[in-house]
Image 1 (cartoon, helix red, strand yellow):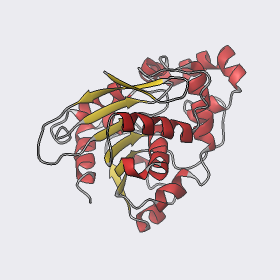
Image 2: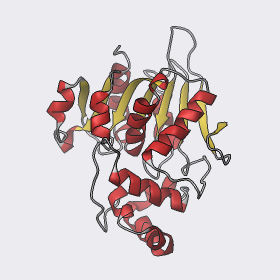
Image 3: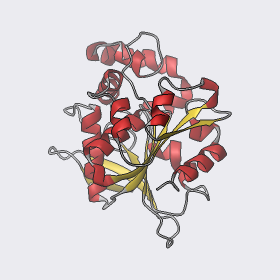
Image 4: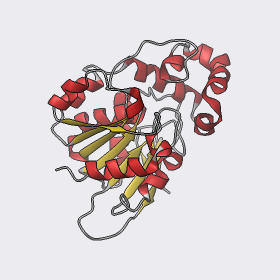
Length: 260
C-alpha cells in the first residue's frame, strides 16, 4: 500500500499499486471509484485483466473512502477531491496518466483533467455523472443522500441509506466517513460550474464514455460525440459495468486506451 499527504492538515490518500508488465512504453493507469465505493474491490480484477495489465496501475481511494483518511474538516467538493487526487498523483510521480473512473469518480476525473491537465492524458468514464441532479428522498444514490441535511444524515439518514442500498454497495459504503459520504453526495448532486458535461466537452484529450446499453442513449449524447467523446454502449450490465460484464469492460477500456 502507498500513501501521500494531500491536505495542509496532513490527511492522506492511499492506494494499491500493481506494477504490471514492464517494457513496451505502457502508461500509468489510475482507477477512481464511485460514491461510497473503494477502488480495490471495484477495479482489481479489471486492472489485472490480461488486456489491461501491461502497465503500472494505481487503485486509488479518494479522501473519505476506502483505505484513505476521513478528515471531518475537509469540504469534499468535486474540486477539492480533484485537487487531493492531484496531490497524490504528484507524489506518485504519475503524469500524463490514463484515468479510468466510475460514477462520482468520473465527475472528479473530469475536474482533475480540467484543473491539472499535466496529470491526465486519456480519460475513460464509466457511467459517470455529468450533470447536476435534484436531491430526492428515498433514492439509493447521491440524490437520496443529499436530500438529508448533514445533521439528519448523521442522526438517522445513514441507517436509512444502509437499508436502501443493499449489502453489496454497503460493503464499501460502511467504510466511508459519515461526513465524507454526505458532503460528497451533496456536492456531486449540485455539480460544478461550469458543469462536468461542459468541462468534458472542452477537454482536448482522448475521452471515452462507457454506458450500459440497456439504459439507452445518454442525454445530449449526440453533442458529446460531436465534440469528440467516444460513447460506447456496453451490453449485459448495469451501473457497475466493470463488475457486471468484466470481459466487455476490459475489452472496451483497452480499446479506449489505444486512442491517441
